[in-house]
Image 1 (tube, rainbow, N blue to C red):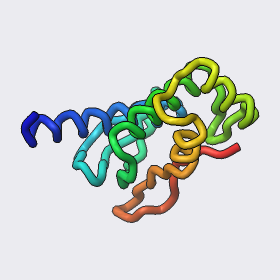
Image 2: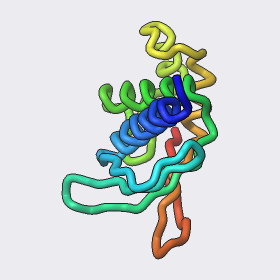
Image 3: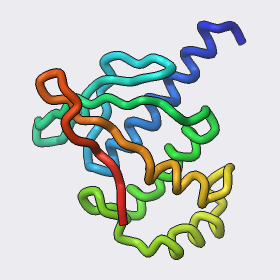
Image 4: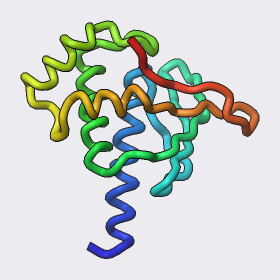
Length: 134
């Protein structure tokens, strides 16, 4: 695979992750600028509200794919309200292991997701973050 093709694959994975992460907050991801290191765009809600966001990529491609799967799984099961995970951590981890949702160990993926922050941008400045917690 040439460099351009690799870049397209990585940016698609970044967009997939950010769309899945936005889904945890009942939003959709609209990319503006996506590079290997950083993504900027908007989280859009059905009521027309929008928030400019920025994310600094720290994960490798496999972690990104697993984090996307985890976000989708949490959304599908309605286990997130606002930014709070409403299922017990042990129960969630056991559920992930039992259903073989992830390629990497569930605990590792889970910890990466809990450390993820999507920065809110207001008037050009990073002000707050979207993140998950129990």
